[in-house]
Image (cartoon, rainbow, N blue to C red; front, side):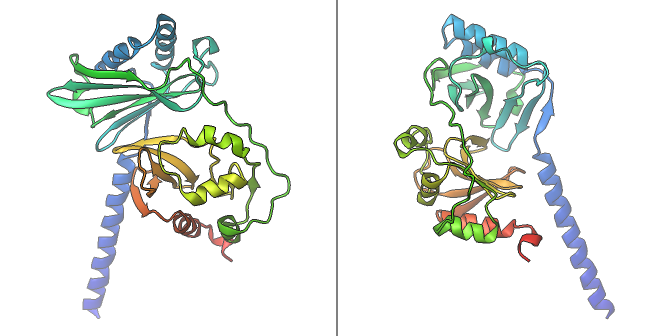
Length: 308
């Protein structure tokens, strides 16, 4: 009996240690919000960014950076990259006069450079008529104070003054239809809370062409029926709502959002691989079966009261 108790004690202790390690790892990967300014490296790269554009756009970009530098921002050092997102002040928002025409989420520019004999590149992101943030790969933490780099190439990915597809104004369907197929199966797990009128088929290509990845056939079938479906504790995003998250190895397009992460596809991936991006930073490869992936996720995250 004493031997059995010792075994149980060891097993419990081991479980506690494993949970503690997982918690610490997760904590370390949580986003870091701060009001600190930009680093020496970032200031050099911003100067390179300004030089890509005409004087009017340069003036707007400089005004944006001046506005965002002293206020709240999100910075995270991942294993193989660093991401930063710039958040405005709701009380004192960025003036519309400092914004440019392009309003969609898109890549603004890419700069490749060398520092300390290593190759790096930075991608600047655009959203709502202003610079949204940037990602540097590989992890640049050790060179953030450098004052000397060698730029090997730089390009504009999307002209900030060019036309971009306007945001689709979603309209809720008052009476939720009776769906068959995948939506019907999901509705059996958790009743649909809200569903929205679909985008007309003749306009769908204006949105799908912006996604540089293979979208699951089943997802495309869903958006032909609706522009987003809300189940309460998870939701399928409409094609006009898709945006990206930058992780160590690239950008991931959000398709379905849950409380602890998102089902996504990777940018420039034509294999149709489905991923689960945890908000902690962990990444699961779910294969290529979108139906199985979303049904399993829906079942595993269903609050107990919905299963009774």
